[in-house]
Length: 313
Length: 272
Ligand SMILES: Cc1ncc(C[n+]2csc(CCOP(=O)(O)OP(=O)(O)O)c2C)c(N)n1
Ligand SMILES: [Mg+2]
Image (cartoon, rainbow over the protein chains, first blue to last red):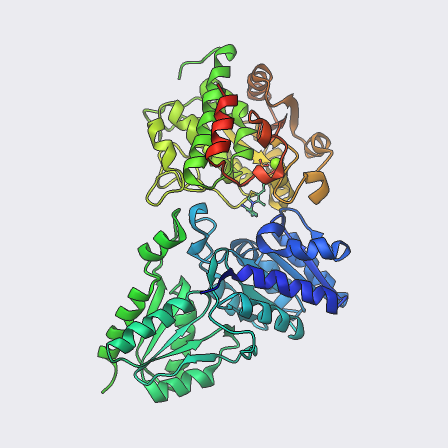
């Protein structure tokens, strides 16, 4: 299985955009090598702006560039984009519906040894609550490239979350990608597993194990958290009647909550949520942390079995 | 805390430098560059200047230390171990699952840490708050805060610089590790911060400029800060990122890279 960090997809897309669209500008806050913004920096230095360690300044500067007709992509670690510069994003960017693209790198506990301060587990909560925002969590490097290209075509603020570690490439070059349109990766009839981000791979693994137990699980790649593809969720509720959500994010206010809101409104069905259970992360290897914090196929399988017991007969 | 003459601090600095390369090597990640540049500042502080008691980390009257540039925690962990807060044997657990020595300081896990940090630009505000609380509580403790030079690009730092002067917090001493490097390159290339001393002075601080690797200058600067009244003091310490390990010196790439086995051996050979 090909392994590649999702952030590489961001870097590749910026290079394509740099070539195709002279209005695309890239900003970073002293982490250009980590976010892969440095690839653009090398090719198009006159359109790259290192803002230093000043995330709030960076996001509001990007707002000004958008007002001036440019398409700025501003990146740094997710904790510092979504967290440090939240008010700038809310009031300066989203309130005015400005065309600013945000790259949140090093999402999730898989950042590893840097520890809890650097493991961003709150971007869905922080970004989904903002009107006018589009929020995308691509599952692999190919999808990140497509999502970044699509972000440039989308008018208004877009937040992209990507990760540090190399993760399995689970989509193909020719797979369609449309903002706001979930992708059904596996058909199934007993329950639906909805995942976003690289942890989708664990959901696919779980599906194989479940099928050996005679359980038919559908897998939905919910790459766009906002706007949420409610039609896909409602159809899955009608056809499978039970859900497991999977995210490398706090379960409070995350993907699971978004799915549950949709179901509550349209088609109530039981939901089991796999994610970070209201705790900060800590130092460790990505693999150790995935086990300790319950983000492997094992927990997804257990959640699937549990939700089936709760499913209305 | 017994005070140690300056000439005896030099060998301690070597020990601390060895700790830094050993622990980051053992972790396979971490931040040696900005830890090595701050060794003299930290050794002179913990072995000579700070009023503290490793037997009683929560002592109410202790001076406080805020590591605003949290990534440099290897140097802090080392001086804490070497002053007796915990066994130096524990240093090699840095960044491992279950360790008290988190990748960035976690005050809830390790006694001796006066704050948690890791998100740059916030420590001086915390130091100001502790200083104000100390004044209100009629405590005479001092608050020390170590900042990176790249870190000074955060707007909040300048908000805190304004606050400390406004409230005349002469119990605050800031130290700038002026190594002129951050992650993406030289500070002056990434986002210029010069002229640093003039800026702090314009914000009404008492400014002390020193060679940050000269122990007698470092100790003298702490003493000068302690006797300066009516305004906060900042020690602007000219330093070399990666100091003491020739191949790490002045190389931005050693900001957040751990030495491998061969590099560790080479570094230790230089630090005998
Ligand atoms: C708010 C915030 N933004 C970005 C980072 C990532 N980061 C960690 S260290 C660093 C560079 C720090 O440079 P400097 O302050 O000069 O530290 P030193 O050279 O002493 O290591 C950056 C950008 C961070 N920890 N916090
Ligand atoms: Mg520096």
